[in-house]
Image (cartoon, rainbow, N blue to C red; front, side):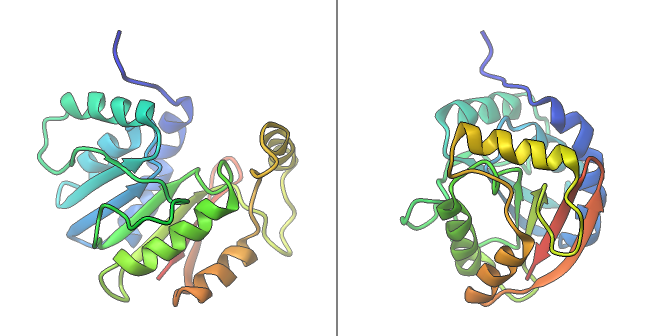
Length: 199
């Protein structure tokens, strides 16, 4: 049996995400993907952005095996072997510098400590002020009504694990400020998801 896993949402969201990445990623350099999951996004984005070196990571052995399996079928040379990285862990990250960091659908499906670790690590490895931390997913925004589907999703996440749930964008902004970063952009995407850019 193949180690490849499949996330149906990947096929739906990869093009809208890529459209934003075209505006927000540097022309060259290294993109560190946190919580790369199945690896389908990593292969797609490495193909879409051949001038960028793509470094996928994940804390799950099953995810790392899936990423490696997809990478075996990738003909390009800009997709690195996946690395074990747990954003919530206090240890230093296995990558010491990057030009951008991408994190898709992790913040709400992990303890808050993982998000704290994400911003802490980003502040350490982004090379300069132009480096971006790019988040994708559903978030709660002050002054903007939360879609019913997102409220239901939030309830289902908390039922699975009380430490999970949709995060408030304002809380992310405050966390960013604690680590010398600030939000530079917000992009609305389909299915009530958004992308938040921090530099």
